[in-house]
Image 1 (cartoon, rainbow, N blue to C red):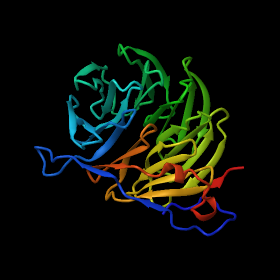
Image 2 (cartoon, rainbow, N blue to C red):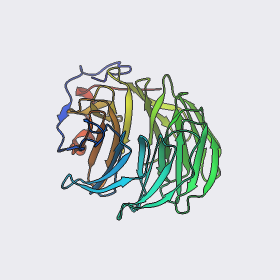
Image 3 (tube, rainbow, N blue to C red):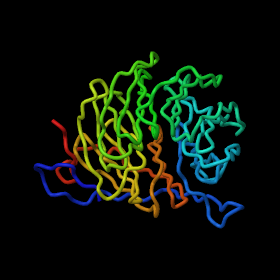
Image 4 (cartoon, rainbow, N blue to C red):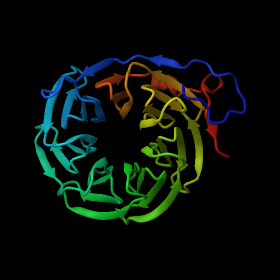
Amino acid sequence: MCAAGLWSGGSPAQETAVVEPSQVIEVDRRPSSDKPPVITAVAIISGGGQVATAGDDHVVRIWSTTTGRIEQTLKGHSDWVRSLAFSPDGQTLASAGDDRRVILWQVSSGKPLLQLPPHPRAIYGVAFSPDGALLAAVGFEHKVRIYNARTGTQVKDLEGPGTDLRSVVFSPDGRQLAVGGRSGQIRVWAMPSGTIQLEIAAGLGRLRTLAYLPAGDKLVSAGEGRVISLWDAHTGQQAYKFSCPSGKVLSMTVCGENLIATGGSDNVVRIWNWQTQAEADRMLGHTGSVAALAFDPASGMIISGSFDTTVRVWKPNLASAAKDTASDSTPISRVR
């Protein structure tokens, strides 16, 4: 169970709500192996009707969340696929991984639209800008490469905080780009100028994931240091933090203005209400590390992908999780 970073008062912690998956999707075994692929990347299309998944079998699959059936099988990568992202209009899917390539796919047909020039090393994160015009990619090098998402032309080359970069994210208004990785540093650029705006020392351990809250005023970081932090996106000051000593945080998605979902090496997905200082929900069922999470605001659906080779669909009561339950749930700490 994730515990409070610091707790100075309130009622004793009580058990949080336990949520069961509404659907479990199992990928067929690979022809060359007696085991199905592990899932390390998921993305959900706006509206929640389709989900993309990928992992160590080099194949990207697009599923119907209604039927649980595969609608498109995208073959083009030659190694482990680590990251997926749908464009804001849902028409394009970006995939990238250990083969050092970014491929842009047409969702409706499953056909490749563009294949970007190979990077020097493996790619671990891709992200579209909110207007869909830009695509950022990071990985095992110090460069943050930004492309025109329609033409595939590289338009900017930024110097990242280290040579092992795991997460890249645009702010909701597209005016910031944040990157983090092994160094524990977060670097934030003003966009489109590419001027460094913030340098944040996020803490111990490799950062695995970054996300902005919907209002864009806070940036959330988490990773192997087992600390989840909220930073003021304008000043870089830490606003809140809480710890998860039961496992490393490997994945995260924001599922409301005050709700954050995390997954990790303890096989559990948790929803945190940072405003009320509570762990609101706990989603149980995975038997392996939860390596990927995605959330669709329109449907309220959370998708998780795991090393247990399954994809799980969750429909938690987010309205209930967003309520003030600070007095009877696991608290987090506010940095003053």
